[in-house]
Length: 98
Image (tube, rainbow, N blue to C red; front, side, top):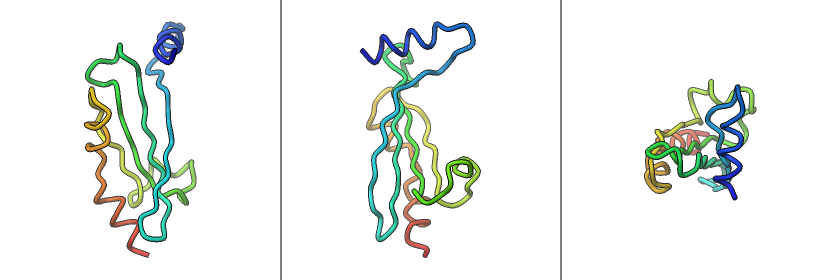
């Protein structure tokens, strides 16, 4: 079903890069970290999965501009590869710096 929805959304005239997003939470020390996994469907090939992690207390509007507490990994054809591509040391450093 997800691939069918993604294909439909990408077929709209001004749409691109539709993906299903799942969010997970993990605690590093006392800090909550959110991990988002994006699945762009089978048609995305090598770029099917991507993942990002951020400290949960960063305001949504500031997440992509955060220099500390946000990491966007490179896409990969496998879920494990996308998760491995997140710069976890940046998140761990930010989570334990307080």
